Length: 190
Image (tube, rainbow, N blue to C red; front, side, top):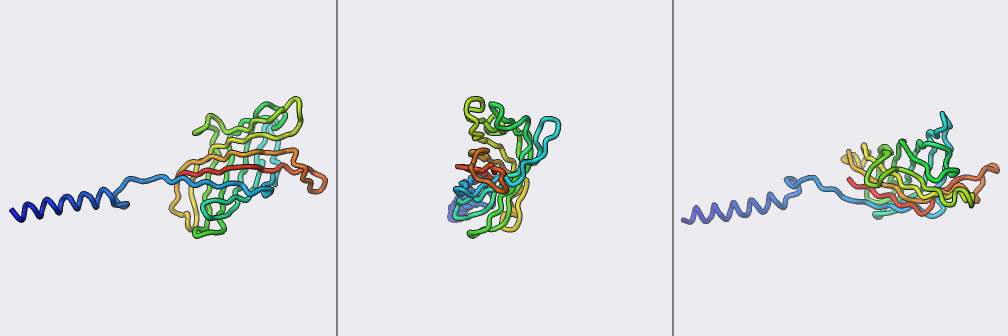
């Protein structure tokens, strides 16, 4: 009788340990959110026009969140002419988040996907006909393909970047107005 009681207690304790153990639990997904640092995001390369489409428009912005700071860079491919249309559909590209401060350091990177949790990766331009302010709301779907250093175990996941692309920033370098990234939020799930 004592052996059966001991065996039952052992089985219950073993079941509790296995159910609560992170080693045996299913893979979890964590969500991390970063925001752009005010006045710290710029288009550093306007990209190349080819067949009426733009390839490689590259933006870099400082971000902070989760007790870390870093840099988000994205090279975007899109259809059309940008702020001169109601919206610009993004059809691809790549991105990387380099974390430079905090407990973890390294890079998470991936590709820009045309569709995802939001209907379409695109930029919706404000008042594109009546007011040439050249500012648009960007919603970009991200796919995570890997990580380095402290993020080497990050091999997959998804994310979004939402923020403003301002082509009338008032910031000039060599008499050329530089588009800026404003009010952005980067959300990654891995």
